[in-house]
Structure formats: C-alpha cells, structure tokens
Image (cartoon, rainbow, N blue to C red; front, side, top):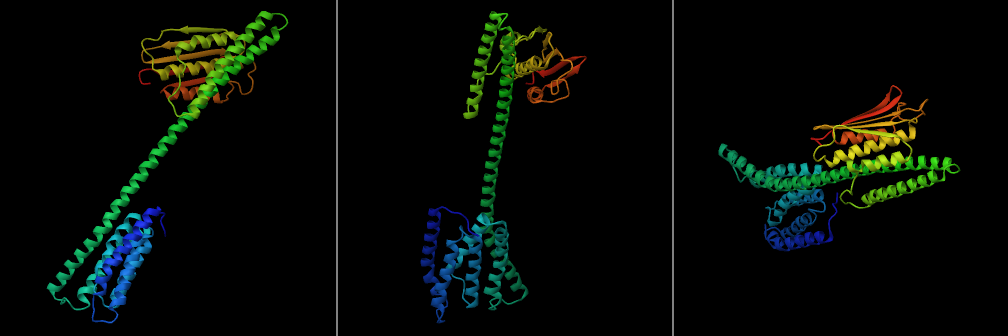
Length: 387
C-alpha cells in the first residue's frame, strides 16, 4: 500500500498538503453558511482532501479512497463542492502514475464514475435541469466535459507511468547486455586459461619424464630438459598473470598470440619430444584479422598438446593453407594402441575439443576432430573475409 519515498519528498508533500488545507479552509467554511454545521463540515472537508493530497505519492490507493470519502461527506450534507475538491485531480494523476495496476485501473474507473456522480449530484438531484430533450442533451454534454477533465489528469499520470516503465526496461536491458558481455568475457578467459595451462603442463610433464630417464646416461639432455621446463613455466606464468589481470579489471584485452608466434609454439612442442612436420601452402597474403590469427594459434596449440599427451610416438603432420577467403588447418598424429580411455579419438568430448570447436565457431568457422585410419585428425576451416 505504501511506496518508499525519500525523506525530503515526504516533507514536501506534507507541506503542500498543509498549505492547501489552510488556503481552502476559509472558502470551504463559507459554503452554505446558513446551516449551523457549515463550519465543522467545511473544516473536515479541507482536512480530508488535504490528507489525500499528502498521501498521493506515498499511498496512491489510500489517497484515492480518502478523496472518495471527502466527496461522500460533502454530498451527505448537501454541500456544493468547494476549492478543496481540486485535490481530486492531483490524486487521479498520482494513482495513474505511481499506483499498482489495481489502483491504476481503479483511478480510471473513478475518473468516469466521479464525473457522472458529480453531474447527477449538482444538476439532476436538486432539479437544476429539467429532464426535457434539451435538458438531457445539456446533461450529456456536461458529463462528457467532466469525464474529459478527470481523465485528463489520469492520462497525464498514465503517460508518466509509461515513461518510467520505459526507463526501467531500458536500464534492465542494459544490465542484461552488460551481464551477457561479462559472461562471454569470463568464458573467453576460461578458454584461454585452459589452453595456456594444458599446453604448458603437457610440455613440462614430457620434459620432466625425459629428464628423469636421462639423468644417469645423458646429463646434457637433462640440463636441456630443465631449461625447457623453466622457460615454458615462465611463459605460462606470464600468460596466467595476464588473464587474471583481465579478470580483476575491466580493461581492453591484453596482447594475444598471433601467427607470428607459431614458430615459438612449434619450438616448445619439438623441445618436448614431438616430431612436428609443418606445411604451409599457400602462405598468408596481406593482413589476416586478429581474431582469425588467435583462433588458428589456439586450435594448433590445443591439437598439438593433445597429440603430445595422448598420441603414439611418431611424426605429427601440421598443414596450413591460407586461401584468399579462408584458412584450412589440419593436424594429424598417430593414435596410441590401444587408445587410452578419454583420449582424443576415443569418442570423448573433453573441454579441449569443445574449446577448439568454440574457437572456430566464434569466427564463423567449423572444426571436426576424430579418428581416421589409426590416426587422430583435427580439421578446421575458418573464413578470413567475414571474420
């Protein structure tokens, strides 16, 4: 029933109501001075309509009921509506602008019913208009004018209500859009985090295993493996710090890998013990969109990491074909026999494969991955012009 208002709003409404009652009370007292009850009823009317005016924003429904009470009191004592009755227009306005949906439509009905009741009370009941054809036409015209006047106040409030609702809807849409963008950003960062951590850990594990086996027979190989572990871990740490920084701050994306970083990626994988044979035909021409470069890098990073972790010993073929409108990526490696449960090519759909497909879909491309004739093959096609 009561709306939440600021303290200054309540104070302003009370002051306006008090001033309204003080100004209209003398005029209300002067109505029908022949009757002894004119003074108390005049004061009561001023207080009732003043109370409706004070509550019009805090409790629109209650204010509308009090206004009806004031009108009924005046009609009960046969009084002519005085200046205090003007508060009805303000109450109708706030009922439409700030009331609940029930109060909103009750205000609409009150505007129509109040106009009809007022005309019947002022003109027909006292016999001020004879019920001839001309009299009926006059009454109809007066009723229409009264309804128009009351509905004018109600309509003004309805327009304010529509404006407020539109503003609230717009704010809600902006908030939903911001949340969607934030969720997309969190998903992107989670995908990048997975790519960085999975790749780096695969390299570190492979090098650590190699160093352990070479500890006794080949100290130089052990030293090289430890160096690779150190550089890979440092690079991964820098990437993780960058991603965590993006999570903590709403900033532009940090520097992302490009196709210029592919040689370094291939070098890390080779240092981990994987034999990579890279074929680029045709080579990229002109500037490749950054989103396409990032997608190609991450897809190759994940595919090579899977080959290192789950593939059988043997060469890994990497093919890149930079056509004018698209780039085709293919990675083929031998499967371990028998394939370990959950390894690529066994029918699983782990986070890595899902991430590669999402990378391709984000730039309008496609990606297929699966076992083919004893090998695990990743094929991706990414458009260049539409990225």
